[in-house]
Image 1 (cartoon, rainbow, N blue to C red):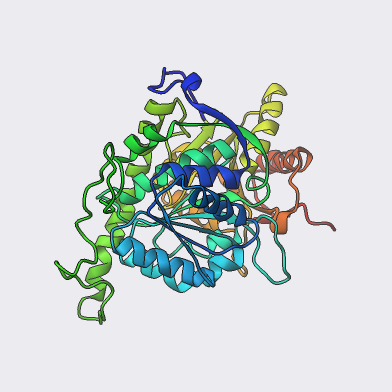
Image 2 (cartoon, rainbow, N blue to C red):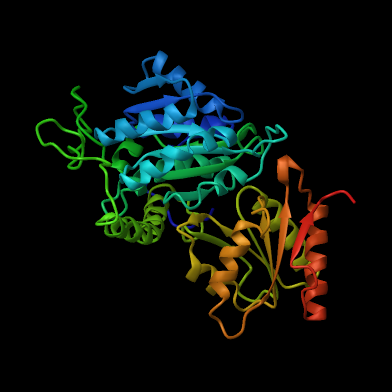
Length: 419
């Protein structure tokens, strides 16, 4: 997060509240004029839809709240709602996201701007309710825009941004906002929220006219939607004659999403004084660093804390937080880390039989360079295993040794596993 320029809505005109990450997401959805929320509880996401149900019960939103019998049904319901022109939202975690698997691909292939909050949690078995990124990595090839947040403030900000990104005519794809389970979802922080009417203006009002009278913020009618007066086909049988060609616009939309994410990040900065790097990556100290660590999510704060200490000790280290994971920002990541001698890639997930997912992406980003840094993959924090500063320092010390020796003896390291 950075500031400097006087925002249109200065902090003194924003609303300061103490909320946990789940509540922050619920408030963001409330402020975003959502038409339909389909809800099924699963730890550590449940607070999101619970809190939103309170807004519905208290008459604070116009939203149609649909309690469903499973996560598969939740995603199916918001697919139907979005196809009808509604602004739709749901949330899940872990096995719930896995149960949505079939419908994730349908949502993106139908080009529906759904927003999904994922309170990241380990996948079973054995049963574990704590944080890692295995659930999110299971959907990385589903043609969703995937954003990872570092703190509760960013969870609120990014959820609002997600609606604008998803509904951009250049994108029209669903967006997943990932926040670390328990680490963020259940941790209380002071954050700043915008007055609701300012969020309404930022999003351009409702996604569609709802049939009720909203004097200030009537939305535009959605052009591509299910409408008996103007019949359209959504998801018909599409065999080898045209299926391949129909994937091309989807591919191009995902390519364009990166620049839309950057633009929306800057628009949010103009409004609030908060931005997150350039929207796709958030770099600290990488310009002259010999050693750089890449990371997604809340662990970035701990890594940056240790990096600051090492800088004071004269060690040139940097941190690159990857905020946009899909579409992967290959060019931006390569430019940020190509000058380093060694890069440690932190993954809170593992592609079993291979490496951590972001390690594979970063390897691809650097492959075409004539000179590239040595890479070490650190898989860490599975099942919610704590990542204290002492463990991060040990990782940096190992990377310093790799730099001194000029070779990588163990490309895959399991950080924090007991011997």
